[in-house]
Length: 266
Length: 266
Image 1 (cartoon, rainbow over the protein chains, first blue to last red):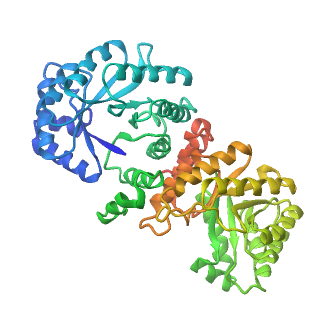
Image 2 (tube, one colour):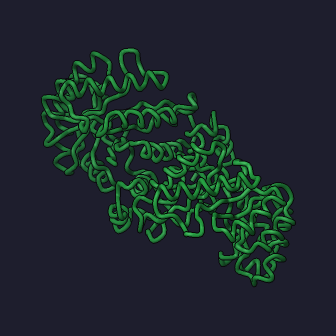
Image 3 (cartoon, chains in turn orange, yellow):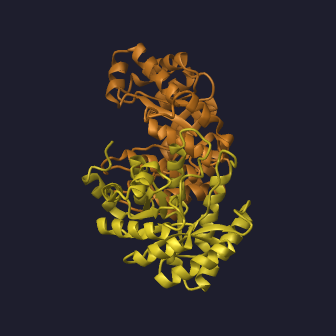
């Protein structure tokens, strides 16, 4: 399971302040602590700065974070110029957050992936928005994956995000998403699945329990990357445990390593 | 999800002391606190007393606990005379823990189920022991379920326990158990599934994380009863969350009730 740390994102107040003040110490600390907590990749997003400054700020952040930790980064922006700047500055294979079946986004992001050999989070939506029912979601997802493969990406470079809705308003949302991942996984062996955690529990109190159960259930259906707060220790512990149970961590090697590091207590 | 509270069991030191001293206050307290924590049924086991005293002690415990709480009980003993005494004393529909495909146990426990209209935990094993591989486990399980139905039980009265092995020694143990539940559930619609938590994580440090992830993954495969410590608040929270995600608690009604009772905090 790839844990993509979500903390270096300027929509978070503390991060916004660090970015505005170009506070390198604060951002380096945030990077190092996320990796120590279990993140294998760090999302970098500075979307709240002025649009014309975003490429330059993204370039600065990518260089800063890669100077502090050894993990690859997930370059996160809605602005293709900022994605390009981040990819240019990045050492090694980056991930891009994100592409989708929306024609304009697809047209602008695809060349960046090809030029920089980046992997990508592919959102399961198109120009009609997020598909409402299971058959449509499968069709939209399958077309997006097929298009990306036809345009030169390997299945292993694609992290499909099924865009789960909230169970507060769609009681079958999680079940439909699990089913979508199982179907796409069967159709496209090697395809990865990624998810964020802000949607499934939207509008429900004490949502962290829903997020945690959602990640475990989703791992059972093929989820192998998640954008999350790596400081949620219970979530990290459940992910490590699920990897053992799903035979992704045979003989509990990583689980026992985490135990030896004191990361399974509390 | 039926949470069967495991605390009234004389293999637990505090319970053994309360049983030995016939401490009604302690046992009533244990019963009431388990129900308040989320248990919908209470296991009652006094297997550590002298065999000739077990029926009498079981009768006393069943009457005591049912006088204190409104939940049905799971009468738990390897001694058919103790099961009979407990069932005789029990008001309403009891559960028996347990029957299996072992011929002697089957022959002795079945008449008790029929006489008292009890439901039962059915262990997936026979005279050859716990089956080693997936095909054999399915065959043993299907035969046991078919025998019970032929002998008068309904599928809704059977809680099949797939007897998961430890992932410490069998890396594929959990995956095989998930697969077994899915296959039996597809073959026998209405069949319930129950599991304890002492096996899957046996021999691994900080095993509670494995137990928690195992319950969530198992719920995704059909598990609907678990024998557990209801004072494990994180586990109860994950179960409540999983029920929402699996559409067993549409519109989050029980989840929000638990929130209002303060059971989702901490």
